Image 1 (tube, rainbow, N blue to C red):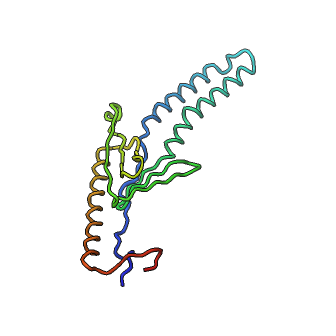
Image 2: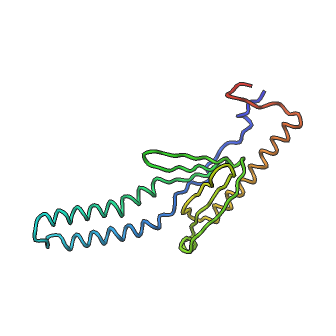
Image 3: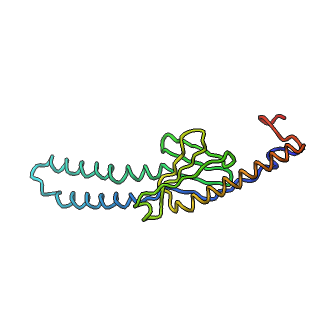
Length: 180
């Protein structure tokens, strides 16, 4: 008898995404302004501890305006495969959420005026079981929305075909933990 894993389609990675990093340009401009201000004011302070406070404040602003947004951007990753959508968040504590295309879902596109200008947007996936999963700041959001709709529809028909074959008296391929 054939194992259920022999009939399952092979999973292919279709696209890997990160949120669009347009806000990182603002971070870069703030770091340049911070460096210019510290460079201009360094050496002009009369007291030595004013210099120390200036350099510490400049370093704190770099961490706040450059490092924190960069780490926030790096902490999000979206992967769309032929079988599921994988959303990963976090650097230290990782949260991984998966949505199977076979479960069926609704796809929503939400865009602000700035997102529409840059071609990105927020794609919401609602499976009806819990809160919608949002892919925030996805580049080319309209194409991602159409891709997810196509994958949900094609996988839904694949499951329907398997159910029809099982109802027609085909071989029982149901397994639980590898035992029939």
